[in-house]
Image 1 (cartoon, rainbow, N blue to C red):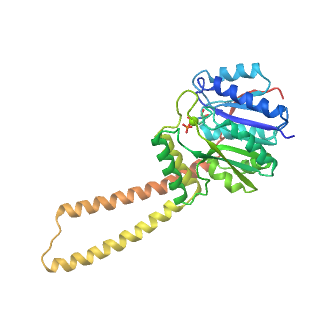
Image 2 (cartoon, rainbow, N blue to C red):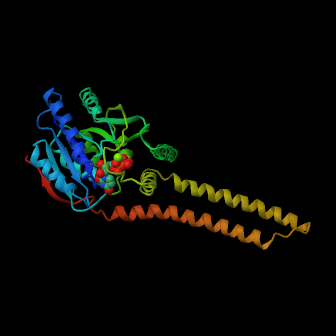
Image 3 (cartoon, rainbow, N blue to C red):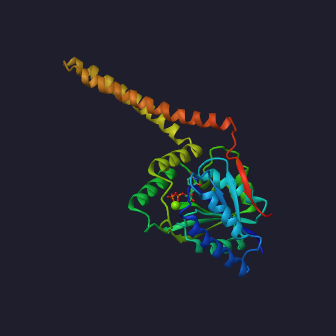
Length: 314
Ligand code: UDP
Ligand code: MG
């Protein structure tokens, strides 16, 4: 029997945790008693620098059952880093780890199938949302656009898969050998390789509290994902540059010919053309700048998280 770790990043989840942790505990106890996973399995709650009472909740859960463990990051580092911290910790203690959100939007009953797939020999099992009926129309559409954008820009990613995922210990080791500071886990997972599987599940409403991913954060996340995995935006700029040079060349010749017939372009036309060119150039420089910014952040090799406190009996 292999040991399972449930890795749960928590940011300001004092409202959701009391309910969701109960369901997680029941799930893990059931798995242990039916012999699917070893009694050494744990639920690892990672507090991502919450500003509310999340850590207090985690501490009392740790007191209440030996199946809970806690990890406290020194400050808020974002969902991806919190997950990474949890996986780094779990790696040496488990044979497989499943990452899931604290709000239980992802059906916890899918865990049984995840574990089955693991025993069938999958090193990575992706949870894929079969429907998004309970998400708001806005969230659904923006998420749809998100995946389209990603694939259009050449990022290899499993559609409708977020971060509900099982990874074997060696898959986690593979993941951790990607030394990037800017981590986009769902983009890296397919890069690890090994045999993988898919489990379909229903996506529910949050049990309590509200989303920590407003539109602004989601757009930033998508942009980050693209620039971490693909240089297509830069190629696009080159193409645009060539296209506009060609176009302006043609325009120039046309204007020369027209001027023979006394057509003189107005000042407004010229001004707007200048602004068009200026706008395109600024956008282009901005995109290139994004990549340079990424390089800047990467070369500094700053730590992705710092752990302040462990709650563990092992
Ligand atoms: N989360 C985190 N750090 C953050 C933001 C979110 O650890 O800075 C956690 C959060 O507690 C939750 C998960 O990431 O467990 C997903 O966040 P949320 O449910 O708010 O996102 P949504 O499901 O709305 O996309
Ligand atoms: Mg959620």
